[in-house]
Length: 128
Image 1: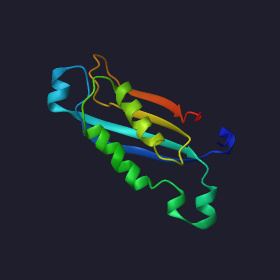
Image 2: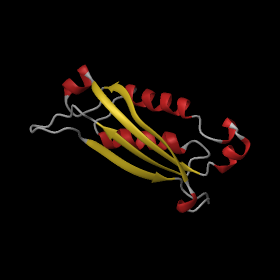
Image 3: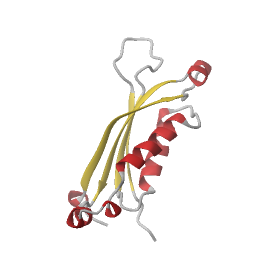
């Protein structure tokens, strides 16, 4: 595995989807918008050296997978959704680390707020 300083980043910012996540019944019934940012950290040199998509992450397919998770099975917590997205990203064999931010811009908060977000960082576990 590469050292973190040697990892490059591919960033998907502002993926938008409608989900039914939340602790309130109305959130599950009506749904609301979610915005997701994903940072993929891995060594992009093999792909760049051969100009070969097969040696990198197809971020179009990855984006579709993230949207499918947001639109899919509801969870109570944004933290759970972020974890599911991180696990899906780390399932890609090239990705060594990911940072996932899930924004819930219409979160049920009783005071004015521009955004509520959960950001997590997960790293591939070393294989035994």
